[in-house]
Image 1: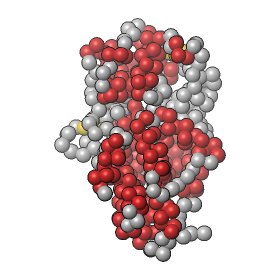
Image 2: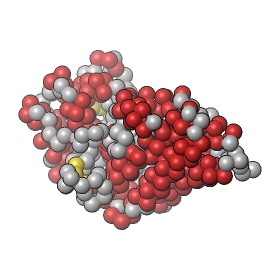
Image 3: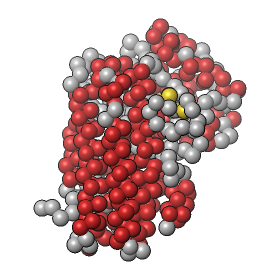
Image 4: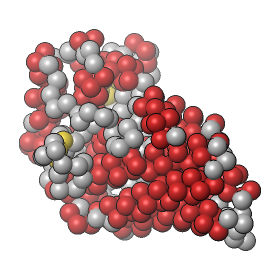
Length: 392
């Protein structure tokens, strides 16, 4: 059963140990013909601090994205171009709604190759933006660092590294989730119980990692020096018409509206929801969650679709409601998933809602993904609670 679960995950570029992090660590540099992108991104903190970012990008040569030959190179290029693009839009005294052609054209070309919009998404910000100090040690806090930054500093690093560590921690839970579905297909109650226990244990470790966010990420610093760069240009009060990608023929001179980077673009919780039978698709909240899948790597989207079509774990549990261990294991998964969401909600209040807004480009009422995040996050948790089995 385990081999089949691992094979399924591998088919969708999901690692049984690392989850949605790639099996190989991200590459740290592109071939020399892309050195202009590498050098510019390396200088971002200094250029932003000196107010010289836009003139520097304006003088940058246009490079041909067709020279990127591997998936790892394309991931790296998307990371660099996304950081440059968001620095261009948000890195001045005023936001700029026009991205110059020498940046816009290759950015759109790389994004098309990857099947994602040309905007900073969670995949570039977190999944492909880390390295290990010791390659023989786990992907965990204390052994990972970021590859690229905006302003840089421990608060910006830690904010993303916590997410990277959570992704790695989720790997065994995703394997257990697939194993639970296989056990349902085999009508093996004991195996379903064991798999659900493994899934819950993984979520518990994820929560423990998430709760380390305040260790090195201060709410004031996050809001005032980190958050401003990860917004997108959909439902952004500072960019009501979106952003123009100059020279991109596919957009025919029209502004584009894309959502910004958000942890809701991680595939972990949607995968657990799919396996546990938690359906949040009704109403504007559900539509927003489905829309965010456009910003995930395509194979991860396909994996979520596959999980939704496989044997229904919740139906099996409710049909065996007299099995106390089975129901207890399932309900523990639901409770912990809800707890993870509530911790996220608590941080959203502390790190964003309670801060003092100074600019329309960094609103405290709107999430980086362009939503009324406090309302949505609270609704996430409440809706999850309703899936407990055996409660009124």
